[in-house]
Image 1 (cartoon, rainbow, N blue to C red):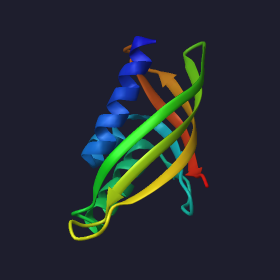
Image 2 (cartoon, rainbow, N blue to C red):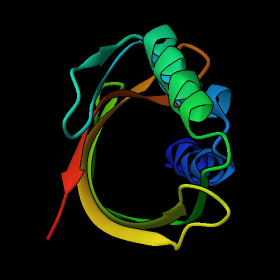
Image 3 (cartoon, helix red, strand yellow):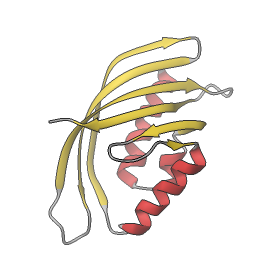
Image 4 (cartoon, one colour):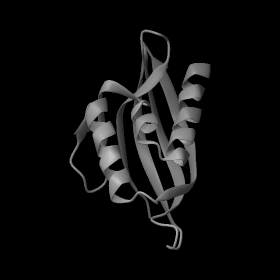
Length: 128
């Protein structure tokens, strides 16, 4: 449980930092990321590339808040399954007004050989 909680804390820190590498490092090599309105992103390198492209497109964007609430965490044989609700707010640039949204996610975590947990499959979408 402590190792999974470390992953959750890294997720919050990486999201707030907006660092493309820190965000990609949360995932397994063969991870799949499913986001609203986008094709599947397959593999940590592809996730890193997508993160870098997004950062280059909006270099002054900043996540102001990210508060996930983990529900129904289940662990079995080196895998963990959870669903989350999260609230987030961000600014696309320094001069823009903050925008907020609520979303939900289904995440599958995998324990790596070194005992650390990483996201293997993540799917999220916006909630009303």
